[in-house]
Image 1 (spheres, one colour):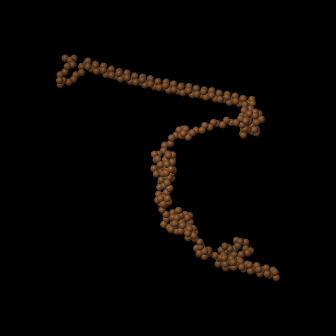
Image 2: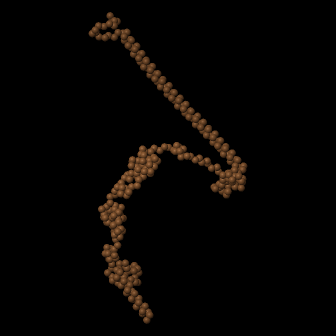
Image 3: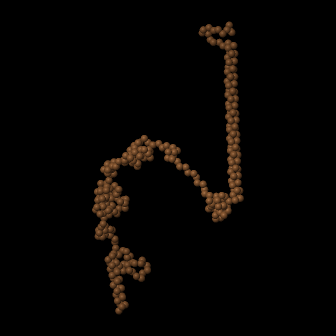
Length: 324
């Protein structure tokens, strides 16, 4: 029959009218449920947003109320303080204070800090002294308990590492400040004296120059001051090299006689004039110019001496003629 839902094996599946209706109903129900869920989600979201907005407004209102309360409290406290200060001022306007204190900034000499002159104060106002703060002595144990405990290293005995580049570093590698008082005390108690040879062996050997006689290089401005003739500075020379310089009596300098000094100096070129005579009566030339046309500084000592002798001889002759 057409309405029969039975089928044989191998026959095609035929959808009947009832099944189709049921399928349509199920599809409608599914869509309606999805629509209902969507509407519920939208409603829940709107409600959450409304609750959040209400909460934010409540927080803003509470904050405004707290600020208003704080402002009112501050104004009340200020009013109380001003009232107390005003009462003190009014009281001081009636009479002088009971403790005279000189106001060094006042225009009137001897005026007190209260504004009244010195003569308006009573005898008791001058005898009162400012109350000194009570000083409480604290014991060392109590003071240590109040102070923060400092963390020290685990080293039990502080010993200076002489070969270390850091000053005061212990042989454990930690600085002196990181050691406990017990470690420092044990080092002081167990300190041993070391002879000079042992101390030199522990110290880092300094490399010196191979020069055995330190002598300062003179006349060369391109090198640093104190450079030896070997090219190395004074600090890189050994004590023996410096001592050898001291023994030789040179002390970094060399004494030379006048002849040797003149030979090393640059020879100055003089004029060929052999007798210096001042050119007189010509204002167009510089003062001191010789009759040869060269200045006095360009004449040799012999020319100057010859000119002086001739001038002296002429002067003696003139004076003789006058005397005659």
